[in-house]
Length: 322
Image 1 (cartoon, rainbow, N blue to C red):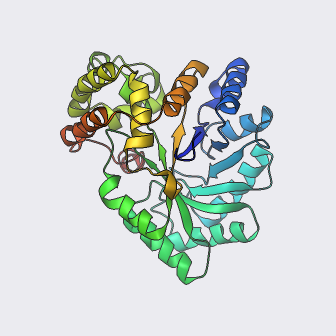
Image 2: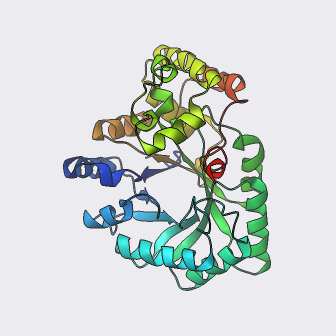
């Protein structure tokens, strides 16, 4: 990728669900397109173990996350034990980035941070990351760590795409002030931006929006709302006028036309369930920025959806389930 392109990170949440043939093809594509980073997490079912089993953890820079999305997940012992399990499952002695995956309202953040500092001092990770935290939480965590001369967060992973942009006005200013890089997850809104409006309205969408799978509840709660579904029709017209796929439109917008900037160390996390999808995404990013008029039409969609648009997977879903 070009030096002016943000970091491209391969998201491996579903890697264990793929056939060995698909896994092999995926990693061949990552090598072809010079992708060097893998994103995983303690709670991604068998992801860490699978990456180790297929022999790729020594060839890529690994980012993983502490236990999360459950009460007590950020207690000190949980974080310490979580890291040890992740390292064992990955078959590595350390990772580049270790994230707090989401807030834990049951645990004082100071307790969590004591575990983070212990792991950092032991050389278990190089960079401290946050994900799904509010701007005020980011500032608080930074201030606590700075005052204690402890490791400060330098990466934030957040939900960001053309129909989820709340963080531009409140989170990004904090990140820029504190020199924290931003990595976008869900750049195609969990697949929402490639869906058909009619199937969503009928409750018959497939993939992550299928009501027959556990994550279907989350993605439908986040995105299957009237204004967002209506915006899909305009989204399809924009892609058609640009002569590209709806997925390509999403990836090129978030990579080159959004608040993400390569010079700030920012990145985009891409995922796929099929090799063809992955190659389409990587090709789209290689094609570079959108035409200015097309990017402006994408920007105009936000005004129509912002009142119903989700913030992130924690505050717009996870926290509501507790």
